[in-house]
Structure formats: C-alpha cells, structure tokens
Image (cartoon, rainbow, N blue to C red):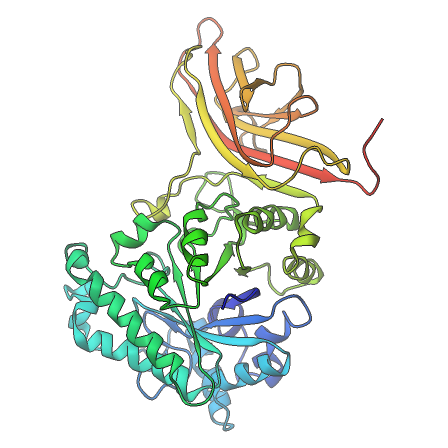
Length: 483
C-alpha cells in the first residue's frame, strides 16, 4: 500500500559524526533527528555505510575505522571516537537515533550502500579485479548486514542504495557480467524482501534508491520493472548520487506509472544544489526555497507519493525548517513563488546519467536552424493570483548586435520586454542574461518548448554561442492580478 512520506536523509558523516568533538554529547547524538522534528518530515533515513565500513557496531560487518587506526584524518578520528564514546556508555549509536526518531513521531529506515562491503576479502572488489556480486560471499555478506538491520534493530524497514554508484561506492557488477547476472540481482532483492517482510513481529518495509531511467538501471543489472511487477519493494527513490544539482525535470514519469500499477510508492528526490564548483567561476550554492517548491510542484504533478531530500544548508535554520514544512503539503506548494531552472550535463556522471539539454552549443549563425530546449512547469499561468512570469536565458559569447529568434511553444518573444545583464560577476565580458517579462506569451502548465535560432552575427564576427542557463521565475500575489 502506497504511503505519503516526507523524507530526510542523513549520511552519518558530513553533518554528524565528522563534526562533533568526542565524546559526543547525547544532545548532539540526537541532532540529526531533532533538527527536522516538528516539520513535515515523517520519515528519517540514515545511511549506515560507506564503501569502507558501517557506522554502527555491527556483528556481521566491519565498523568504520577498524582497519585504519591510528587515524591521520580528523574527521575519521571523530567518527570512531564519537561512536566509541556512546558504546562505552552502553549506548548503540544506531539505536540512539532510532529511539529518538520514534520519540519524535518519525519512521526510521536504515540505508545500505549496495556496492560497498568493507572488511571482506579485497579480491572480491571490482577495483582489485574481483566480480563483486557475482561472488556468493559478497551477496551473503550484504544480506547478513541487511538482516541484522531489519531484525535486530527496531527500524520500520531498510533501503537498498543502488544509486550511490558511481561517486559514492563501486558498482555491484562488471559491465561484462550484467547480462548474465541481472536475474541474480533480482533474486537477491527478492530474498531481502522476503526476509524483511517475514521478520518476527511487525512486517518490515523495503525501499530502493535507483536511477531515474529504465535504461540506466538495466545497464548496471537492475531489472526494476520486474521488482515492481513482483512487488519486491514498497518504495523507490530515483536519483543520481554523484551530481547534487536539483532537477525539476527529472524524467521519472515512466517510473511513477509502473510503480503505481503495482501499488508501490515513488518518492521524488530533491537534490540540494543550484550550482556547484564543476562550472568555471561557480561555487556550491544551495537551491532556494522557491527552487525547491518548483521541483516539488513538478513532482506532485507527475503523481509522486512524497518527497525525499538531504544536505540542506547546515545547521538547519528557520529557512530550511520552513522549506521542510511546506514540502509535505502539495497545496502549500501550489501557489507559492517558484524558480525553475534547467539542469546541465556534468562530467561527474559522464557515461552514467540521463539526458540534459544544457549547455546547448549553437556553432554558427543559421537563420533556418532552430534549437529546441524542452522544460516542464506545474503552474497554471492563467491563474489570477499569478502576478509575473519571467524567462531568463544565459548565453555565453553573445553580443548585443547578434540577431536571435526566440519562440516559446511556437510563439515569438519579439514583443516581450527584454533586459540584458552581464552573465557573471567574475567574467562579465563572457556573455549576457536575457531577462524576458512574459506578458503576451507565457509558458503552459505541463510541457513547454523554447526554440532559439542564431540568425545573424555582426560583420567581422564569426563562430557561435552557447546557451548556458534557462530559468523561469513565477511569482504570486495575495490579491488577483486583474484590470
């Protein structure tokens, strides 16, 4: 049965065990739970592993830090000493969080990275020439860890994190083993589901972090359609771990449809960043509340059963808590200001990612060549309380004398007011922002297409331009915007 959930994830490290000086105070040990308590977050998911160890005193796996003492890294030393300081007081670090979550009215899921299994014979690892999940020993080890989490801790369920690779962990199969061993991966998920659901006492739930497209999942041995058809999971979370940029246009419609046909929930991932350092002259910038609302609204329109986020600016303050409160209610999201922006391709996920339409290179002036950029918005632009819609297009190597043709859903923008500003403060000469106040031509609720043609360049200037950014800002007012 599908459940509405608002989920916050903590990876145990960056904003927790890496940070606090040991011995950790109980108030700080509760921090991951307490910082989201009182918002719409009703489910807390905790990443109990990295590729090199577990963040709790496991009986069947290796606790993080066991194999690297003495430490030469301050964060790693803190992780070990903080866990040990709780253990020395008779407290299990994982149980401390689970009990606190239940006290605050939240469900708790333990999330395990499927490509990481610290403490096993190194010969099994892909990096050392091993075959990972092809080895029964690896499958047995991961099953044992999941069984320990599901049956020896009072969690509501477990999450199989297949989306951590690449970037957060290795894969579980070599490319040449995918075809033969995809059924083996499905059987592994089948066995875990049976174990979790048949545990003593209340039946547990099983979730999975997977990739956004069917093709990406199949390419690494994940037959998600079979999982859904057989009801092997209770929920799925589509994402690409290695690229933290929020994407309001993530192509998950196929997944929502397939999951709902089998009464399985889809929780849409709200990645935390607007920009990161992968672009020249950019640094990490978190998505604003208006950006989070825009993505949330698109996902609600697709039929998502809830939202899943993490890594908000830390320590979480009033702005972050307010965002987490609004995200739990589709009605609160509906008429709030929104800032849509299109995701760019990233070298961080090159070869293992879904299509991005930016950056778009237009190599030379050609009036007959229109370049299409699709995007989706959830707002009804005929709504009387919608006060303004602005389209912003960032173009590098552009000069004011260039002649552009721009169309939105086939309608020309030539009669809309356009302001020009420098593309970036650090290299203002590099290009321009074109900022259109859309009065006569507005985007439609749902799918839209922006078309751009570079018609002509000034004499003596050849070459092309690059469409770097496309953004849509939607603002609402309290009173109707009528004559």
